[in-house]
Length: 416
Image (cartoon, rainbow, N blue to C red; front, side, top):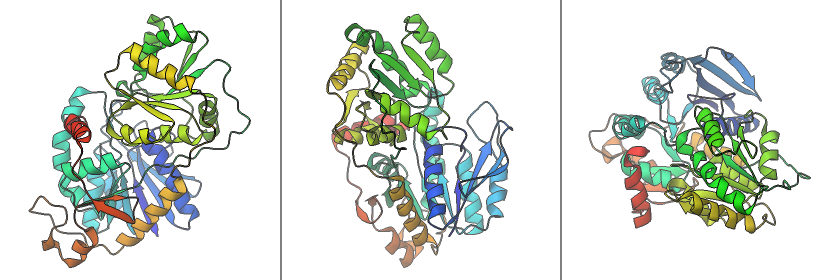
């Protein structure tokens, strides 16, 4: 197959979607498919075309340079001229997805959408998410397949966009082998994620003085890059933690470097406002690290793993410190956990692409459902009836959320 993946950002920029696209695209190439990643470049300093492990990467200009709107008109024209058999839109947040879906519709090319939902540090941006979802819904409903990276995400968008079905394909969690790397003699806590306020790095930073009361030799590594970096550095200075805290990222292509830092950690932390299914946590679990997360959104699903504990998002610094110390006291896991791999993810995506090659794109719906009976028997039989699909082959009806899930859904009506 000739597969076109469209995403606003790609390597060398770092983030969960960038990692996901890189990991699955190169594995799809290894399976014998032709894969092109169509992305943007706000800086004007990246190569317009290059090849990464067999994946063709094409970048077009996007504006404005200092905002994450990604207005990129050339996306539409590149897709119109593409010879791809199927298009996969990775993420929905920016102006890139509607341009891509409109271009695919004009070409009658089947397309798949993975939501990759996330939070945002701007209250205004969070407020516009609800109208954004309503505006995108007609395009999303005409996708050959929608995908969530967690059950939480799939159920949310089934309800929000009135989808008839949504597959669930989790992120992989593989990391390079780092045998022989020992835990730091000084307990190391690693807070992972892009340096944005909503990622919650400030929460573990505020709790760290209390942790030092019990473990005076502990160290904190805030692993990431982003616009909140300077504020975190200033916060560490106000707390007089400069000698015990390191803030900064590792290039996303340096997988061994990331793996080495995580392997040396006694505890990995992600106290984010919102996550669908964080790649960094999966990587930490693969390496056998204990993890502390905020209790909510897709993070709640990770608590089923023995190595993961959750704490309320509204927890005080002392409560966060107590939870971190409790996890540290358990010691390292005896062996890494068996988790979904990027090979699993790529294989399931390939199966979806194959299944939608001859998908008939339905006309715009006048109803609120995704694929109503007026669109023909073929699409009705394909879509099923109200499914949130675990993995790909295993399907079940979208359940009504339990009360804790319902609270999360209500809470993120705007913030997602």
